Image (cartoon, rainbow, N blue to C red):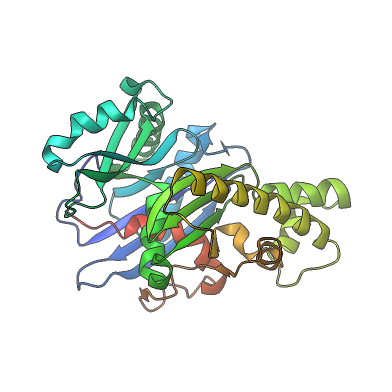
Amino acid sequence: MAILGLGGAKSTVALDIGSGLLKLVEVDHKKGDPVLSRVAVAPVLADAIVEGEVMDPDIVADAIQGLFRTSGIKQKQVVVAVGGRDVIIKKIQVDRMKESDAYEVVRWEAQQHVPFDIEAVELDFQILDPDGEGLQMDVLLVAAKRDLVEDKLQLLIQAGLEPAIVDVDAFALHNAFELNYPEAMNGVVALLNIGHEVTNVNILLDGVPLLTRDLSVGTRKFREDLQRERGMSADDADHLLQGYELTPDLEPYVKNRGEEMSVGLERAGAFLQTAARDAGPLQRVYCCGGGARIPGLSDVLGERLRLPVEIASPLQRMRVKDHVFDTLNADEMGPLLMLATGLALRRRG
């Protein structure tokens, strides 16, 4: 869903506007293989962003400006993403034709699959088998409510930035995932992006994202459990959630919320199997986002799902410039940077 080009820029700057944390990433494309050249993060005031919706644009725009100042990044063109319930991703089939002739056909077909007014959405598509010889071709359809895109653009303009590309969360995650985990591009795998308020479920079949779902559970729910049930302060709860051990205070809530996530993932996988005949059962799960490092969560998911569960990081195979993580812990930050890094992998042209 590109709206502008990146011009002659030899690096791409991406901004991931999360409900709890802003993540800024710069990737250098000058010498072929992408190199992570700068990273900066900053917290967002509580409730300034709720479930991906910006409730207070002034506060968020100020936070974005502050993040750019502290990062030292001068480039104003940025790549961002939209996601959530107002974005639809669906694999469809249409009669085989040239891509240049497909837009009107895909737009008409989209009206059968998109539960929004087709006049109020931004629509894009990708032919998955352009060299196929069958009478029909597989098309990955993407539709996002225009208001969602326009609100994101307006926020960037308010922060003094130039929107270069508007991507989709699921595709940006896939970009970083494909680069760092090429072995996961076979079979049916799930990528869970466990954020502050929402967990994004992305299920891939042979490397193609076929299904996305949002679960209304994220790190905020874990923290609220500890505050309500254990009487902890928000800081003490966050300290436990960001720790390295599964403590007795934390264990029951990790099990309960892990069960909730597992059920959501199982339902998504079951739906995919009924909707796509060539989709078998889930084979492996990868977790990223801030919640991926909650002590014991990946173990709980693995036990409940009876599947291998791994914490995913864009630093698994990607080259990183010296000193990028001098003031940040790379192991802790990696899972949080999956979306922003995937956005920054978009290069000019």
